[in-house]
Length: 380
Image 1: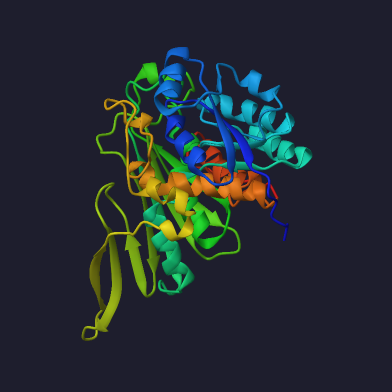
Image 2: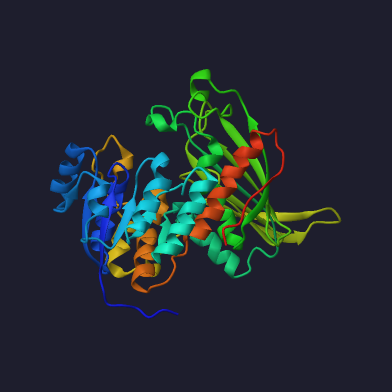
């Protein structure tokens, strides 16, 4: 294992609409020397910087890439830019964190994996779903063997993208499916190897134009590597009435855990005594997953229990992310920074991120071929 260095990290946060939620967490982390902020919207940049005390400000990623003032960059930019910008950050000699998805083409995934290897810098996809209160609870159950043998996995991500920025219009649902896919693959430590996916519903003609995607909903069945378990994932983006939700269900011989509604507790089912000759009764318990400040340095504990807001009308500008994404943001920041300081790969490194993201890209490819099986490449 690599030895821990004493050097503190100098990081730039790019994109403040959602990225503003992360800057104060970086600022509070004991491994950070300073934080710079960047946004092409100068009014937002200075409003945010003045209000929260960030003096280092940039209007261009290029300025950061050509500067020796930073060791790492966290990209919270539009999806179409992720592939290109991640490669540029790594090739500039800086560590790169990037919001999901990693990219929307297999070619871009390969390019990022290659850039991480060639640059000898860290890449981390900042996937919130594997650091939520709910997933950390499920992961602890799995590690303790409380599910018994896992028999099946199911994930879903429901969302309505009306009035979001133009690049979202008509996006294939499975191109942004890592919130639903990653908890399932992370739990078992497996990658998806093959997928059959069916599209469903009818999309407005205007929404089909940008990406040629005719489906508001896509549902996939994944085969997992060296595992008898399969996983089902459903992703919606348009023209479907349903409150926002990222969910996962874990079905085991001894216990099942289900999460179906955003602000409701988990449902834990456990096998009871055999009732007569037919079937077994299952007892259900409602579980409120605890926050996990024990996994974080003391300076970050506040950020999983409190929430402040930059703009009350825009929850994507929340600054202290206690409720948004269920407490995951401080864990992501901590893992990215510790991987740099300890000179090791982060948990969600380029290969892991590519495997999780490629599953969705290949699922959409299958849907466009009427459900034909598609082999998902490995990025090892």
